[in-house]
Every structure is written in C-alpha cells, then in structure tokens.
Length: 268
Image 1 (cartoon, rainbow, N blue to C red):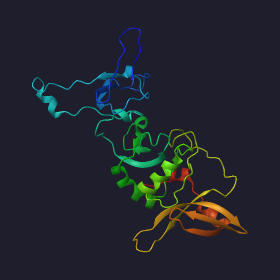
Image 2 (image 1 turned 90 degrees about the vertical axis):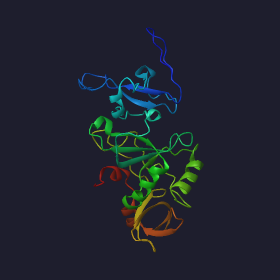
Image 3 (image 1 turned 120 degrees about the vertical axis):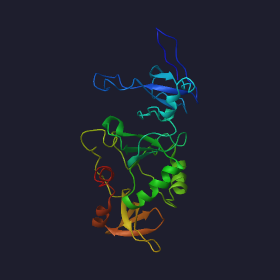
Image 4 (image 1 turned 30 degrees about the vertical axis):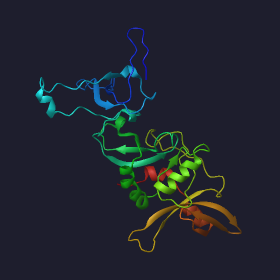
C-alpha cells in the first residue's frame, strides 16, 4: 500500500500497523465543522487497494503518564466503507439486517455480507462485513425464520469450494442452491429505486422457497430448492435437503424466490 506524491515521501504501511484514516473532505457537505479530521485507530490486517494510502497516517498511542485523562477516552472508530482490512477489533455499530451474501473473493478471502447497521448517517449505514463463526451463530437461525438471503459471486472458479462451504457451514446438505439469486449490479439500498432484476425466461432452473413444518421442530423453517424439469403438467423441485417434490405450474410460480422482496419488504 504505497502513496506516490511529488511533494512528499511515499507512505507505506505493513500488516499489524495502527493507523488513523482521514475522514470526509470529499466535498463541502460531507464533514461537519467540528467533526474530527481523522478517525481510528484501525489495525491493518491485509494490504488492499480499496483506500489510498494518502488518507492514512500512523497512529500514535498517548503517553498516559503525560496525559492520564486519555485513559478514560475511547478513540473514534466510525466505520468507513470498504476498509474492512483496517477495522478495529470492536466497532460502535449493531447489525440491523443482513441484505446480501457475496462469494466473489472466496476462498481467498472470507464470504462477506452487505448489511444495514444502526448508524444514523445514511452514508455510513450500509457496508460489508466478513463472515465469522460469531456472525453465523446469529445469522443462520434468522435465515431459517425470515427466508434465505440473496447471493452473488458464485462462479465456475469457486463453484466447488462454495458448494462445500454451504454444505458444511450453513448445513445446506446435500444439495445447496448454487445460483446467483442477486443479479443486479447495484447493491440493496444504494439507489433511489429497487433494482430491477431480469424476468425469468423459463421455470427450469428457477429458485423456489417455501416454509416447512418439520417433525421434531417447534418452529417452521424456510428451505430453498431448484426446479429440475417438468413432465406433463408437473414440475420437479430438488430441495436443499435432497428431497424431491412435484408441483403444478401455479404452485411453482407462487414459490418463486424474490430477492428484492427479501431485501425491501422485510418488516422489523
């Protein structure tokens, strides 16, 4: 991560360095008069090209023998978009909703989630977070009760490793849905209008979703499946648990998975 400037020496930072990040200053209205010029500290966990090194400065911890009051203060840690490699260990936000799951950099990097946080500032409210065991412990029960999250980033290159990950981490076994259900180039809530997804050309290969009441479970759970083929008037659906069921066309259409409804119609 190197900054090139004709007026000063290039900056470089290594993994593990503590840094502060220049805040705002992209326009006359993106920074209030009394807002800090830098936020931090952030710890560099991976060197990326997602933020210019020009906006970084080395973080220096206060000498508490000279400034004892600083021990009681917490440094500002407002999350910046696409700076997950420099996030501090804890950030002052809570996840309100999980909106999209992305595999585009997996397995080189973790699966990530486009989330809505509880931050008041709309420009800071939506950002990416990496998948962790703690995140899955919270999210997977929500997915069972609220419906399956839209997905993107599945490709021929990572198909097999994503399939194994879905079987083992999400317990979608033996037949996880390997379809990019979010096909818009726009992320949820990043445009004034809902993204328009292309209409289905055929029901074969379509993703469906339904709520099932399972024996031995107190609450129903959502399952996804893929329409495999049709014979006469019936369509065959292969569900993630390996079961195969047959439905009329109107039943299939009533179960078609709608990723924009998941993102935009959810009621808190």
